[in-house]
Length: 175
Image (tube, rainbow, N blue to C red; front, side, top):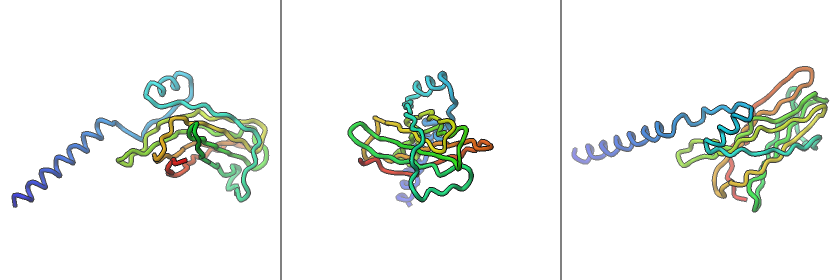
């Protein structure tokens, strides 16, 4: 009986510690990012790195890309070298779009509790009167062996504006 009380007390202390940790970290995962210079400054003050995208017009999408609406698939690719994590995001439309773009890009890292936190953001970019486009981003502060995911929204306008959210899925950065 004494042992059962001891285990219960330890379990209760562990649970109290976990609840305290949740309250101290705040509402992780419920951050939204607005466009604009003033919001970019706020994000930088919060410790989230702001990245710049390089726009690439009229890229060649890989074969097997199947459009399911007027938007073609959004392809998120990640490579790495001594400079850091290189993120490439490509998008396209069926036909020619008055605008094709990628926006609201978030680089998220998974912590030891399994919670995703945003470590870097990028506003993205867009191209006009084209069928495909892409952006290239460098995240120089990527940690080897850490688990990441990339979130973004790709969009286009061919006789009507459409946008879709995309998620790279979890991957370990070990390049």
